[in-house]
Image (cartoon, rainbow, N blue to C red):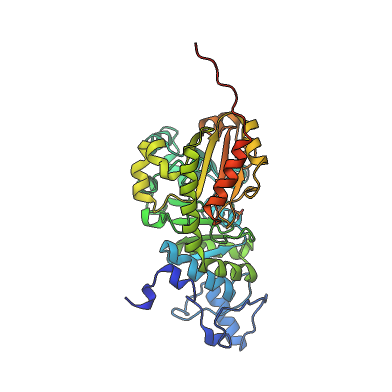
Length: 425
Ligand SMILES: *Cc1c(COP(=O)(O)O)cnc(C)c1O
């Protein structure tokens, strides 16, 4: 083993940073600057030629020009981000949405078809339906948990298979933890790709990542993150990332330069600090989530717990995908409280420690009501179809002492009055 083979959690402490370029500082400073001084006009000319991909500079190292194009904090952060997924290159963004929007706008052109999974993150759903369609891109949805062979049939019968350009998935689905088989998506993409059109598989891996699901290893081309969630991990930054091959991410970076959706130096620095504790934070949260799931599943006022550890019980047909694609049960779970919106709200309004807020993946536990909050915009029929009911509460489990989380859940559930059961004669 050489030190370049160290595990990502070891590499997060220093990979990609050269102290001798920064007065010997152990940690990478914040390069809070918009522009960089060239040593000579000739050097400036050469850097610009490299930035615009002109021939004649093969093997030369690109220099720093301007912080919308490159900045040491952004570059070192990207070097580290790519390691978790085993990607060749990463691109960092100002938000998860800017990573998603920049990626989709890089590869989709009018007349193309985007096949996407439901339910999608609300912002992505809006982007797909209001912005992509505005540019003449056709969008077709399928349901997480649906048989991909069935999806392929719909694609062929509607005549859309030839125009397919990208398959975009979120797995596990938020908030139900239904699964999608990435290898199957990749097989469909390969089948309809031609010599001059490669169909790309893109996975939003925010929910599990970058620790517990590695989409590139299952044939995906692009992995996207809202780094606001587990990667940032402290509910104090908004950021995003894309990981993949040099070819694909290189194209995304070119678009990013002109959309101006890159990350800033200070946020890059905060994410480098967050990445040092990513693994221990996520593992602590997952251990807590398991204890909370067990507690909830034995509680008389809870009807159902949606947790990856219960995939075998909840979705036996997805157990094989789970075994192949996931390394952990994660720290996101939802549950149905007996009753409806009133009972779910009583629970949420009586929490004393767990914060009533959307978002996820932070050190503190959060609770929210998907049907009226994160998924408020999903049409009623679709909510029914995806099991996003009025009695559902979603929890993002943090790294507190698990006993305190369970204490809070227990006392809030005590306030919930189960509606009288219907009398069966
Ligand atoms: C939060 C989130 C996003 C959007 O990320 P921002 O950082 O808020 O822009 C995208 N996808 C998923 C799954 C998310 O949870």
